[in-house]
Length: 484
Image (cartoon, rainbow, N blue to C red):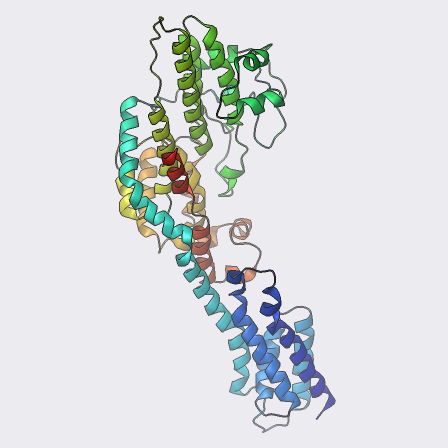
């Protein structure tokens, strides 16, 4: 046998034989599901290694098979490219015209077909089936039906109490608060004149962020030197637009989640200190009103975290009112706080709403929830939380989730005014762009750098898999709130 053919045979045997063993080596540290996509590629590499061995044994089928393998191997830079070029040269050099081992023989197509078509089809099937098998999706769909009656009952009950009633959104607290409230992930802003909201000492924040109120002596110590006049100033505003007012239409559909949000927990800590001061007041109506108004402004940010922190502020208010009444049994306090049951209902309602606007919720349930005008608590927060990902993946999953997307289309047309801000409406409008109209950076940010995942068919299957993996744990949080 020609020496060049012998080298080509050994090269293909060693290279593709090593690649065929990759799943066995990876089994030591990779999860089983991560090995599944490697199986068809390993089988193809085993066939290529067998073709190299067959060439060394002088079998006729090895030449056309290696021709196809070498063409496909040119993409495996750099080793596969070098071996492919050398193998093609060796096969061409030893080719005798008129023989069946001609490189253009039809069997030479077997290599590219095996190396590309089989993994391509397998990857599509794997991502599609993995999306359907995802436990979080099945659990989400089950819980959506299991909790719908309780969710609707909670929402209607809370609607009757007037919790966080929508406002006219005419007087924005953003110019006042945005420069004063610390942002998550950012250093504290410079002190602003007129009622600056500085960060509380670290020890104070830790003691104030738990569920239990600190002892009175600790609160009295932490209140020294604090200026609460800014809470009174907030009474002039009816909503809080926490984003910058000049925030443009998003260039990327993940921009909403990238934008640094205010540290709402810092505001809750201030509210708790303010509430504790009410215990010394003979008539704490003004203090309670300021804290409740602050809770309403935090809720009006239309963020999930803001809505939940606002509910916790009302729970803090409830406990302080109970403590004041216990300490002043003969005094009358004309103030109505939420009950402990009301607070639990509010937590469930906010978490549940996020689950009911996710694309894995059946369209009938989504319509039942979104069409009821009494179902409002947490509505805008849920839309702002779920819309960016749904809008980003819309062109890839539209055929699969047409009913859910139609429901979101309808509700966003109605809620564009109510859910004002740089949230759902702007992202949803951008989400209507076809996949080919998206910027290269946006497509790469969603699906990653791998060119394999950007192939037609695979990208849609991967998008469904990504949506399944990103299914929110809203109903798990709902169950926890219900148990509490």
